Length: 215
Image (cartoon, rainbow, N blue to C red; front, side, top):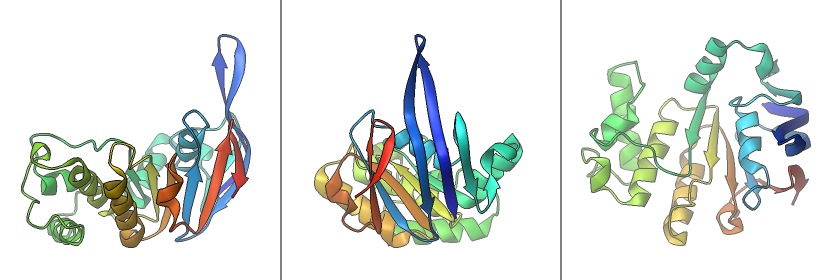
């Protein structure tokens, strides 16, 4: 579904080339759970941004269903991200004055269908009794569950999670990853520094200095 071919992402560091990703070749298949493991600075977040079209490679190509991201204009890329991708990040970005349910529905344009789906997701994620609470009335794990529901609302073909458990305790973090894996509707690419949360992954990739290795 997503194919990276000979991909490099290079930054200029005061005249010195720094490879965030170096000669990356990989494929993410339909409904596959791919874990990307590595320490801070290894390039794993950069890889996620490349695979999701949030960044362009310096060289090489990333294709989604055969279409190279770089050939898409900004409107087409935005449509893919909105309609076919879901994102969960390290910190649960929620709008403080909106309820959990309203946060899940942010950006949704299809009326009652979205409300029904959002309510169902929050109930399945254990927030049925808290969907009308604001973010400051929820725990860190609960706020991250709201973000999961928001990411899943459009039934994405690919879900990208960037260190989604980094701000959570190990038990809560493990539960968040389990919920991501169980309720996803397509592929899941999850980057983390914590090997323990990747026990359910179909495949684990290890990153070192921008290079990708199969575990």
